Length: 450
Image 1 (cartoon, rainbow, N blue to C red):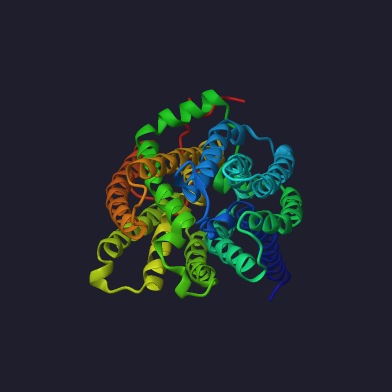
Image 2: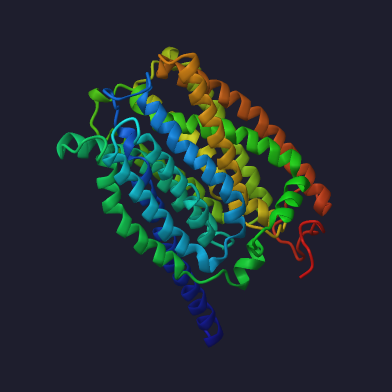
């Protein structure tokens, strides 16, 4: 082996080690930080609040609506805020958000019912933009697929873990269902601030990152509107389908203890199921880093979510005929739902921006999707409370999931066709290629001269 070959191998090894250490740093901090956001947001879902009412309404439904309303307002503000957020302001945003969130949980314990419902609105308002802020640290990098996978699966595993921890604190530490969220949040808060500091120390994307994933920039109001108009049919279909997915996911997360009789199972059941789902999704999304061509990656993602929606519909409509146990049913529902949900919350729009060389950021797409989705959740819960307050949650969820699966299949197939037609129009090629010597033609309305 001559010296040149040795140096080349040594440089390759050094680069791989550098990437591995960066993934541990950025991916680990992102995963743990959003897991702790859930500790400030979701433990209350473990409580049933059976002895509490809100003017003859189901107290838990009202608390859930109140928090989601705060989320909706936060997401609406975030469409502008996250799109325009400068990198040097990110940690300040995290600090302010988590302090307000813990203060709201303390108020939830201090105030008597029904007045403490307002505290959950403040909780949702303070945490609604945290996903977009955390994702902004990791987008636009060569290894974003892996980093986003780690961040995304935190949402899956943390949902079940938050419920399990909440049940443990109430059943074994004998903390009331009103103070339990504040206790868990108090433990999570300093850890979350430490991880936010670690994310803030990440280096900015380098030239190689920008060449592969395009440069990420802030978007003002005019640029956001021009971007949406340019891809209006495609984005409209995705946003509408995601409304249904977000609503379904919120119902599953917030009312799972009403859908399944949890008394017959260990309080850690949710965490165990979500852990398995997490490992599967982490493996699938992590492998996407091997797909260098962005159009191919988008095509694979569409294939995954369409297949997941088909399976979800079959399982929902055929639970009795298939004789599925509640545990198996929950596992399949979680896997299919989260593959679709996390695809759009993590790597899809990062690849979409890179595919069409759009100057912008992922935060705009994710926050807009969330705003529309949470608005849909509020409307569904309000209609449920006024039209059918004594609903059978298990029957309702299965029927809703079945129809959502069918609707999303049709919508995503149409989106897939549009994507390929638009790509051919932009590039003049009929299939993705392995390497491109020149960037795609940029759209004048989206790419002003600097």
